Amino acid sequence: MKRKSLPQVPCPICRKMTDWYDNPYRPFCSERCKLLDLGAWASEGYQVPGEPAYHEPSAGEDEEQEKPGPEEGEDDEGASI
Ligand SMILES: [Zn+2]
Image (cartoon, rainbow, N blue to C red; front, top):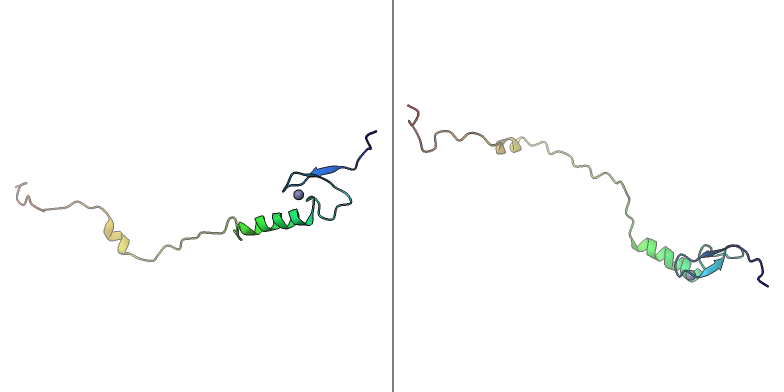
């Protein structure tokens, strides 16, 4: 007869079904998997999502010099006369 078992959850690490209750390492099956998960999480680095990549606009007026302007009188001087 199948005993009505306690709810079980698959270990996120090794997919082994493990008791939900009576399991100090839930949802992991063991301390090892728990540590593995923590390690995996930590190995991704402390990336803060949404950290403002704010680019302070340089207060430089030099960029204005890059504007394309009409090149006047380069080699057709007097052509319009
Ligand atoms: Zn496991």
